[in-house]
Image (cartoon, rainbow, N blue to C red; front, side, top):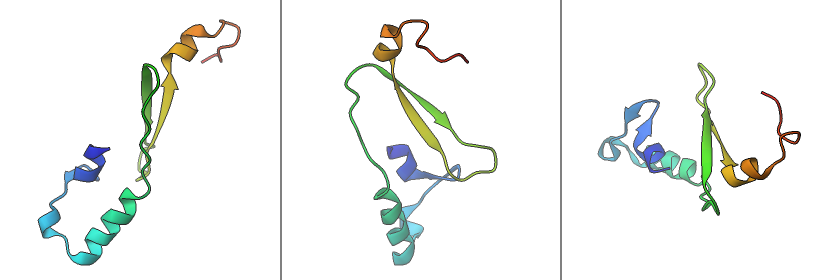
Length: 76
């Protein structure tokens, strides 16, 4: 999440160079984040379609995957 606060579209942000309206936009963007602590070892799977500005990270509980029976696991 901290990287998202410092990097925008692959370039490092300089908050000194932003005017008040731009800082407001950054603040509004931050409000869209949610932070959760994983209760067990997890893997984050990051996806950003080519040409898209929107990315998604799906967090997968490793213990739940390992505990599932092989017939319960979806096929790739």
